[in-house]
Every structure is written in C-alpha cells, then in structure tokens.
Image 1 (spheres, rainbow, N blue to C red):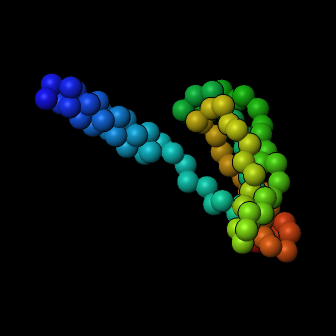
Image 2: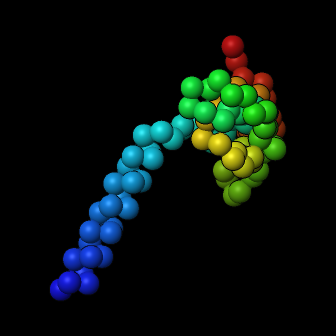
Amino acid sequence: MKIRLKALLAGTAFAASLATGAAAYTELDPQIAYAYTLYADEAKTQYIGMAYDTGCVVSGHNVYAQRVQLHTPYFDATPMYICTGGGPTLPEG
C-alpha cells in the first residue's frame, strides 16, 4: 500500500510539472519552417543567435518541416516557408 501511494504521489507531481511546462510551450504549425531568434532569458534581452529549420520531410501522406533542435526555451519564430506536397512555398502576407 505504501509503495502504491508513493508511486501515485510521484505520478501526480510529474503530471503537474508537465502541465506547468506546457503553459510555457509555444505551439508551432508543423507545416511551416521557421527562422528562430534565440535568447538566454525570458525577457528576451540577452541575444544568443539564430537557428533555422532544415527543410521539408515527407512521411506517407504527411508533409512537415524538419525542426532544428533549440537549446533555449526563449525564442521568436519567424515563418520562412510552408512545406506542401508540391514543394516549399512562401507564406502569404
């Protein structure tokens, strides 16, 4: 009984940490390739550099952008192009 309670409490704490982290997560469209401006701090005052998605990937009937691994949670994302079945296209606007 004691072990099950500890496991339940640990699972609840882990779920709460995921929910907290999810609030800070930025949802990006999987079909759009982005250019990222990277920052070291949440206020985005300490510029680190730039990073870019690396192309388009086709998997079955799905086409999506190949994401670069970002080593900071603080960034601005600017759309570069849209991955489509007919190849990359520029975003409108």
